[in-house]
Amino acid sequence: MTREVLANIETLRSPATCKQIEFFAEVFGVMEQELFFKKRHFVGKEVGIDLCEFTRRWRLSGSPQN
Image (tube, rainbow, N blue to C red; front, side, top):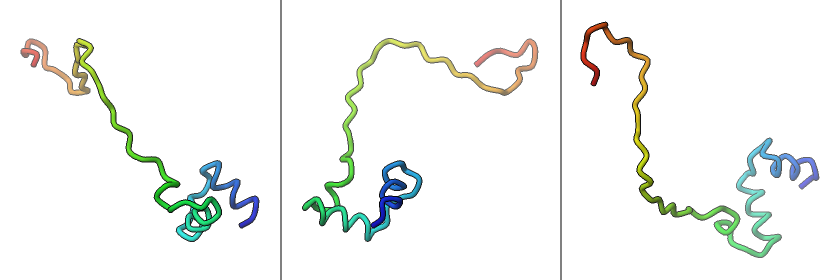
């Protein structure tokens, strides 16, 4: 693997191939799956925000709003 190939992967200019992922896992002594982020669990809470719906549809004058 050349420095240019590694730099392109690091800067997200090109994705890593399967062979490159296998190479990284072997070099670092880990399984391929460990090179990827695990799903994060988001725990949200209700904060009492009023939601508004915006649309580009034109309303006819005098028609009720939905």
